[in-house]
Image (cartoon, rainbow, N blue to C red; front, side, top):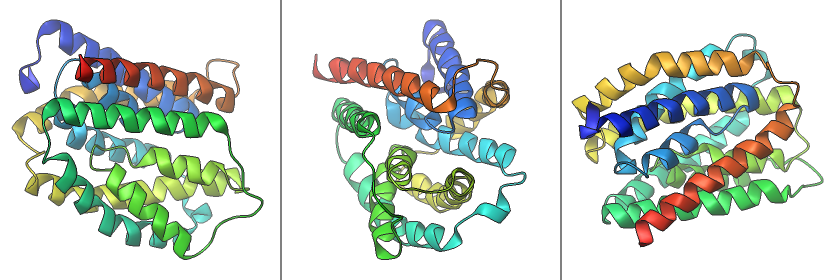
Length: 246
């Protein structure tokens, strides 16, 4: 199996991928963070960074239909301008530390972001211009472990944005960021043949989970379901932090 995962670890990651894809399809976020956090319990979480980026691009393609007209391209431009600066800094820092230290940093970051998302802070008006560039720097740094989505989702959710613009802008931003990220991941040694094998194995589960989540089989409102996803993510991050510290 890719990354020398045993049978138990492979089954664990298969379930994690399917559940994470379902949650993303249902609530619109969390796939990369959930998969990376789950992987930290059975392997080096940096192994899965490039894998989730590939699969996020597939899910963005699934979600693109009908979203193009609602994209706030000015906001996407500012975010990318910041991410161009932030990602190399994040990769330099994260790849310079040990596996356990990386696991602890990732887990602590996820726990902080879960707290921010659960707090539900709000702004009175939408944020325009350079502030989006500053968020892009944060998002770029966070994409070193493949988790650029959490800060941007929290930032957008705090603003009175139209839901269609919120969703479409995220759908447009992440594939562009991923295309920029791919060669940097290669340079920093995060891409290997195991990356391609793991992506190929996880692809059917990802597509299936994302499709099932998008069907909204449960009667729960997506916003309420998001709270469940945040709590699940926080639980995985707490376990990962415990593993790194013990």
